[in-house]
Length: 468
Image 1: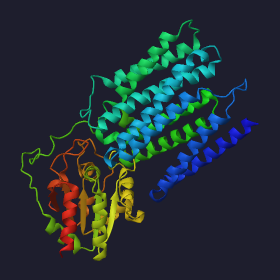
Image 2 (image 1 turned 60 degrees about the vertical axis):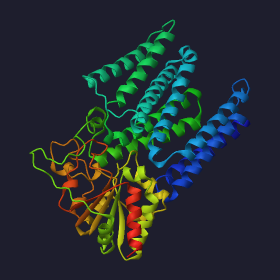
Image 3 (image 1 turned 30 degrees about the horizontal axis):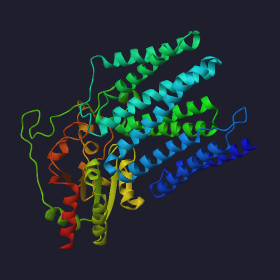
Image 4 (image 1 turned 135 degrees about the vertical axis):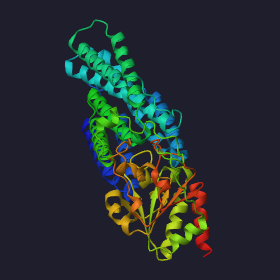
């Protein structure tokens, strides 16, 4: 009878997962959706601990160890989530992806022995769980190091595509050999498979440049879901299977959407060199040796320009998150609107370091969702926009994507801000963006540079408006 209750609890958990996932698609409901999915996971865990019985009618046991693990995980997770800055949220996502992959990898390591004596399908599931979970873990740790600044340089080994392909073929070949040949003591080969998967995950992410990191995070998130689903198949656990499939499917869809937003096939992200290098970080001379003119402005002039405009479009980027300036930016928006200025935010699909980074950032500052306008909808409005205020964005507004066939970002859809009447760019310096590519927009005749920390600069703009 307890088995029926367990399945009912799993059904409730799955419904909550689906409702939560649906609500995560909108910033106004994302917090509720996250809470619902968390409650669903809590129900699944508690029901498993209290109601699960094996074929002999015994429960799980080892409750002290399980309780200790849950307690440690809750404490660490709670403090990590409370303390993490918005700038570190992409690293947090990568870390979560990696921990999910690590759990699946350990399940594969623990269960390969019993699976060897069974049929082919369970053994294949265990090996697949081991491989996918392990490469997800190691790849996510490299992504974490890149995003956290511990690994600033993109490492591209000689013939790395050939090397990665050879390791991938070796992984597949070793897996097939383990499945088709009854090896008396396969433990050594399992550990070799584990080691190769670790290496492949590292080599898979190391050469990928900064501009492609949002896509990589989505892909790793998808792989962590697939690994969880495979672990669910190993234990015959329906809630793990469905939850993993939901994560895997949504991550895959998001990855495809991100690639479309960059106008780049996924194969180019994985095997290409986009974002791996670029200019020298913002010199003032062009390739033809001609000196480029940088026009600098101040907070007073910028505030006057925007206050007496009819329409202003703000373009947030990672620099806004670094400065934690989203709240003061929202205040600046409200002050302009109180003076009769129409204000919108232009959101590029890959702005920031993770999918939806800018949406999350501005939602934290309680910016109305209808103020956030996606790239395809805002681009036609730039020719009739009086002022564009760019705060910390770089690569997503770089005209080279449209004008320079030799640029690594050529063909990537961008926010076409250069069509506006006036452009104000808030940056600390003339340095290149995360993709390492110089931005010609800095030298555009319509552009005025407002140098400084984003929070301080916007605070100064707010002060200037108050004094008018």
